[in-house]
Length: 455
Image (cartoon, rainbow, N blue to C red):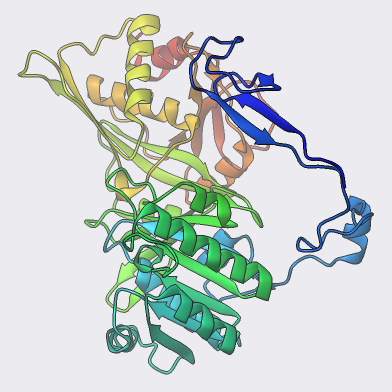
């Protein structure tokens, strides 16, 4: 049997040595050299089940292995975010703020999947089975063929799942799970990592789909080690403001579908109702056009969504003006204000600036730059834009306007909701106007001069 070579490497720079020393000659760091044992090229390990010549061409795999089957839940918005349905043997992590509706959504999803013929188990580590049943009755799901369990011991949960062999298991939540072979408290980093690893491995080994609920920190990130998000196949965030009835389910990672896809729900007395036309819902309360109000034609995943941007500019009574943003990036707002002052000569010094995305929507794409600039200028000059106009486009630091992607889809959505004109950057691929008057601009200075008569 070949002898395993012993080598040493530096953790700081990666330099390798034949023997240990206290100081790395390559980078000069002390106590960074550790022993590494190479893997000898001997026979394959039986415990790993690796066979010589087991690698196959990608074309062979495509020919012989069918794509993984998907199961529809009957909730169109959920199926959209999952990429077309639930994939067998997949591991899904769902995160969101406390009280946003994660347990409500997953209980409704469990009932729908069970009614579609999937054997479903809902395991709650935070509520008793009677409490889950009470919530199901309130949501009108008491007759759903879903099995309930209240348990936090991971060994008992896995034993139950092995015996039941369901098609779908929902674990609410991963922070309450406790593995008896890990010497730490429930909710700790090691417990969350071990529990997520065991449940994900169980899903891959048995073909059972597993949905894990994850708590989030005050920064909005899923609590625990980031390795959990790497383990699972799909990571979903359930977003929304408690003061609004809208809830958005967003995919930030999906191995079986597009990332950044969203599903929109409305919180009602009977649970979460899906919203098939979110643009109409976000613009439903928009009345007579006012200064500072602009409609932005955005893209969320593969779906075009129209929403209203509201800006307010007022003299500041303080020595340092305020910049308040809700639903957008505050750093990008500062950039837009700087470009307006440096390239167009429009100062905002001594003025408080407030920017809000109506309806509790959160926007991250750069194509909202031009709509934000239009809202700021409209509020500053006290001039309202035409009622049936949508705006989109990216602003560069030079003041040039860059074309946005999927322009045609944005225009189609705007035309469907009754808008007759659009303001967008010049250039890009030619598109059909879809019955909309398209006004193109090449730079921010021309936009300010033509729309607001300044610049």
